[in-house]
Length: 358
Image (cartoon, rainbow, N blue to C red; front, side, top):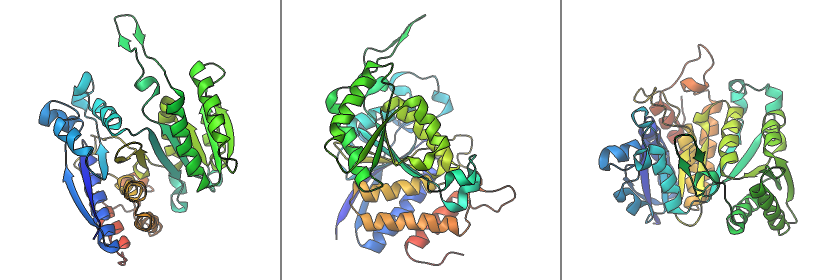
C-alpha cells in the first residue's frame, strides 16, 4: 500500500472545524482508493503564538518540510490584530509559504448551477464561469525590501526578477493546456516598470506555448472583466498583490468564500487551504462551511499526491451534495433548512464512498 505523510495545521477560528471535515473526506478517499495516510497536527498562526510565542513554531517548521503535503485551516485572531513581527498570525502564513518555496497559488472559481442565487451577479452572467487564478506568491510588495514604517513615512518595495516571473508563468501555461488554452496576464505596464518586465517575460514564455493564446490586461480592466464577462476568462495570471485582490473578487462569483479552495505549489511540499479567513465571530458554533476546505483536499490529492482519480471523486461528491440541496448558513436562501459543519462533511464523505445521502 502506498502511504503518504500529511501535516495538518488547523490554525485559528473556524480552521479546526473545517479542517476536521476535510480530513474526514480525505480519509474516505484513501479508504476507497487504497492508499494510506499518516497525518499529524501542528500549530500555526495565533495557535502557534499560544503554544510557542511564534506564529510559525520551530516544531511546525521542521515538520512541514518533511511531508508529502500540508493542509491548512485558517489563521488570524482579533487579540493579535495589532501584533507585530512573528506574533502576527498572518506572518506565520507568509513564512510558511516561503519555507515551502510555494511560489504559485492556484485558486479555481466555478459556479455551481444550484448556487447561482448566492451570487450578486445576474444568473445569465454566470453561465459557463469556470476560471483558474494563478497568483505569484513569493515576490512583489509582500516580500520586497526595503520596507519600513516610520512616524510620517512608510515604504514598501515591489520587486520581481525574470526567473520568478518565468516559473509562475509556466505554471499558468501548463494549466491552460488542460483547460481552454487561454492565459490572461494581468499587470499595470502603463505605469509600473515591474509590470513592464512582467509583460515582457510572460510574452517570451508564452512563445514556448504556441497552442495557448495569451492576452494582456491592465489590472483595472481585469477587475471589470471579472464581473462583466467572467466566463471569458480561463487562466488568469497575476503577481502577488493584484492576485490577492482579484482572487477575492472572483470568489464573489460563486456566492461564498466558504466554497473556494486553493493550492500553493513550488519547490517543496504543496500547501492546501480554503481561501476564507478564520471567521472568529462564528468559531465553535458548528455553522462554518467546510466545502472550501474539502475542495482543498481535492487539490491536495491532485497536485500534492498525484491521486487524480481520488481528487475527481471528491470534486464530484461536493457537486452532488450541493445538487442534493445541502446548505450551510452562508449559502442558504432565507428560510431554507441548513446543515452543520459536521453534517456537511459527513455527507460529502459518504458520497465519496458511494453511500446514499438522505
